[in-house]
Length: 428
Image 1 (cartoon, helix red, strand yellow):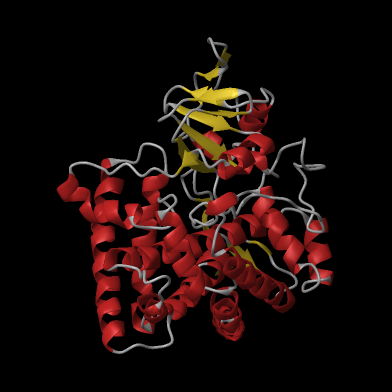
Image 2 (cartoon, rainbow, N blue to C red):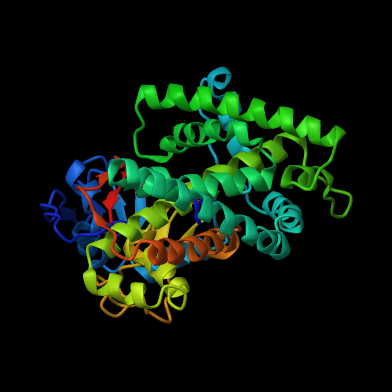
C-alpha cells in the first residue's frame, strides 16, 4: 500500500535544471548507470531532466551504487508493479534486538507481503476498509475542512499568511485517519512525528540518526496501537481498529502484530500520500496562473481531474522497489532471482510515449493513466480515501481564497523517494 501512498508534487518553473551528474556505460547484457546520486540536492530539487535521459534507453538500467535496476519508462514501471514474479520481499534489519519492532511492522504488513499472506491480509482489510466505510467519512472530511479554514481565517487576520502544509494539507488526513482508527483527539499530535521518523527509512542510505529515530518511533507507535487494540477488544466501537479485531474470513483473523502493522501502515501511507500529493500539486498550480484561473472558475467540476494531474505531474512517491522471486524479463532485460528492480513512478508519469505534453500541467487531462497509486496487487487500497479527501478539500480552499499566491519560496523536504514540501507559505 505504500506504493500508493505511502503515503504519496512541485514543479519546475523558476527552478534551475539539473546539471548532468550521471553517465552510461554498456556492459554485457544491458546498460549500467555508473553515477546518479539519489542524495544530491540538485537532483532532489528537480529529478526530471535526469529521469528523461534515463527513459531514452528504453529499458531498465542497472544503478551500480545501489544494485537496483531502474525501470524509468511507463511500460517498464507498470510491468514491475504488475509482474507476479516480482515481490515485496522484506529483509529484516540487524541487529534484531534493535530492529525487532520495525521489522515486524513491515513483515506483517500488507505492503511487504506476497500471496498467500498478502491475499489473506488484503481480503480481511477490504472487509473493514470498504467503499461504504470511506464514503461514511465524507461528512467528517467536509466538517474538518471547514474547521481548518476557520482557523486559517484567524491566522490570516493575525499574520497575513498561512502554511498550506502545516495548517491544511497535513492536519486534514491525519485527523481523518485518526478518526477512522478511533484515536483520541488529544493524541493526534503524536502521529505525524512517529510516521515521519519511520518513513525516512525509505530513502537511500539513511543516516545513523534517522535509523535510531525510526527504531524509537516504531516501538512507541506499536505500543500505542497495541494499547488501543486491547481496549477495543474489551469494548468494541465503530472505529476501524474494532472492525479489524472482529473481521474474519474462512476462520482466519488478523493476529495482534498484523493488526498493529496494518494500523501503522494506514496512518503512514494514508497521510503521507495526501500531504505530499496535495502540497506538490498545489505549488505547481500556484506557479501556473492559467491553470490556477481554470480551477478557480471550476473548482468542483475539475476537482477529480486536478487531483489526478497533481499525482501525475510531480509524484509523491518516486521509487517502489521489488525483488525477483524467479528469473524474469522486464523491457528486454533479464532480472535474476534475488535481484532488485525499482519502478520509478515519477518518471513513468512523465513518459512521452504515454502522455501528451508530459512536462506541462493540464488539470483537464482526461484520460490520465497515471500510476502514482501503484498497480496490480499492490495498488493502493487507500487510494479512494486519498482521492475523496483531496477532491473535497481542494475546491473548498480555492473557493474560500480565490486570490491565493505564494508568500515565499516553498521549502522542500530533503528526499527523493518520498517527494514533498515541509512548508508552503501563502497569502491572500
